[in-house]
Image 1 (tube, rainbow, N blue to C red):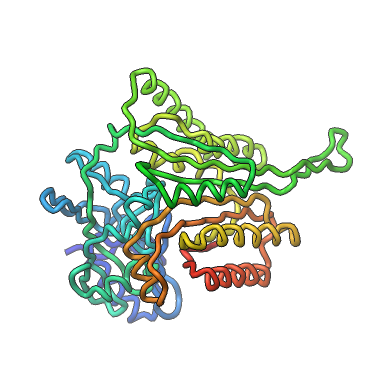
Image 2 (image 1 turned 45 degrees about the horizontal axis):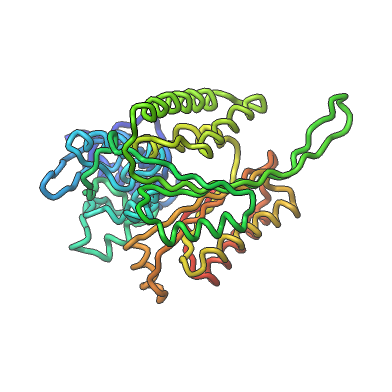
Length: 425
């Protein structure tokens, strides 16, 4: 039996569930507070008293079983979904919802619900979870799933680690060859926000045969630049544009495949350069990387398309930001979108706290969300996820301003029967 390996006085790297149990029990005896990291991108907060100790699950990264008959895969919580998906590809299988970053882990994604540009078709990541193993705050191992201890199952999923540390999961998989499933991109671009929201609603409501779908809107503040002589400033206008992309199955010819290879290599190179470019001088490169997403290739494989944002967009998103996502019922999708955009725009105009306001949106048809709506006494509905990312100016956002923004978002959710997904600075 292995023992917890301490990297420092503040971090532990368990290799299996028994290590997690010992870490939790030892922490309780020392009255320590545990913060559990399921991977590089997502944190699971596990509340215990006193000083924080980090428990990283990144060494719990094994694929435990692939069941070809049941079409399931069982993994440790720290397994990266990109690696799991590669393993499944050898069997002609794949994960239906995987996110858009290669470092997303199974436990981390389950702890926040997990959505992707395929969620209009396959739902959330937690809709794919068959059962899970966890360690509670007393250091006891438990199991739950769709068919047993279902109340506990729903309480642990999407709980951010507050209801228990997920240590292993069994996931549904589908028959798919992502490296040889080709998609054609239908892209519509907009300069008018009203037309963008109207088109996004239409596509989310009637996705047709689209395998992936995503809309992005960017709204920049006026840019002040120094005059050539070095005295005074010139104020340039705002930039407002959007794009909706729907990706459909296709059969490409040799020329289109060749274009895809060239474009793929160019975007990866641009992403690598943008990731290394720092400071103000690197801004044009990072902006170019973001633009690469707005002008996605016409033809690409499903695997490339799933990670397009990771290849280029994420490398451009540097600096502090306020981010929040809301599941808007289709019945009030347009109203939620307008009200959230107006909220952030008004704060930018009044206080100057934000520079770029960007939004990403796509459809979500989820069993989990319908069950949540029913439990709250609301009509079961399909949803559109609307995520706003607002870049902050160098000065930190005052706490009273942040409270005002959060209060405004909560009011939108209450009055529109929407549900918060995640937020942060």
